[in-house]
Image (cartoon, rainbow, N blue to C red; front, side):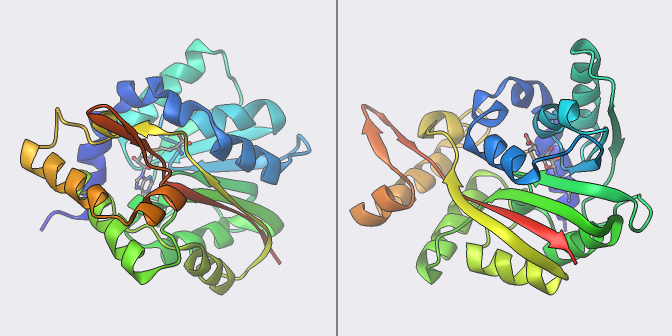
Length: 258
Ligand SMILES: C[S@@+](CC[C@H](N)C(=O)[O-])C[C@H]1O[C@@H](n2cnc3c(N)ncnc32)[C@H](O)[C@@H]1O
């Protein structure tokens, strides 16, 4: 059976150029919230996990001493390091690494960030224990990811829809489960925030060039089966001719290693 790491690499290796151009990922509330939570002094040795094409690492670079940006997919790391060169960003280095096995010494970092990625991780408790290990005492961990609403029905609905569209999706936890897992890993949670990503066109998001029409239909039908209240409250669904727009709920956590 294909491992999740293989699915992630297959998925993201094809999309490095596209991802680097994606305004849905380049900006938005999730980047602002992570910068606000991190609030760096300028001296921090920082790690950005699952950096993709480096949006979070590049936003942090001018505000910290150095950033190491890691990702499981070599093509993403290559693209991010080309972009850093183009933009003459000198205090970011890159390496290929899994979030569940970080190639850094214990207590060697001041700040760890991770944005829009853990729903692809095969082992979130292992990722959190690695983040805890590499941070120094009093070090800060700032996370933002898409989450499911606190409802059994919608947790199942959202994870089914995400997995149908992209088999490298693993699990979108609800906020309460993130809080429990982060606390269990030994962190003190200092702040949390609910936010969401920018509205996306369904026809763009569903990737019709990759997913066959029957899968696109199954996902569209799943959206149509949401109650009008759930569609509006949790997913901000807005009809638009043949298409519709929607967004995913996001959750941000600022946690300290005590
Ligand atoms: C949505 S993208 C990147 C988001 C990026 N943090 C940002 O702020 O734009 C998700 C990234 O997670 C990476 N990824 C997925 N699973 C991973 C894992 N287990 N370890 C490290 N990186 C992983 C993928 O290769 C992909 O580049």
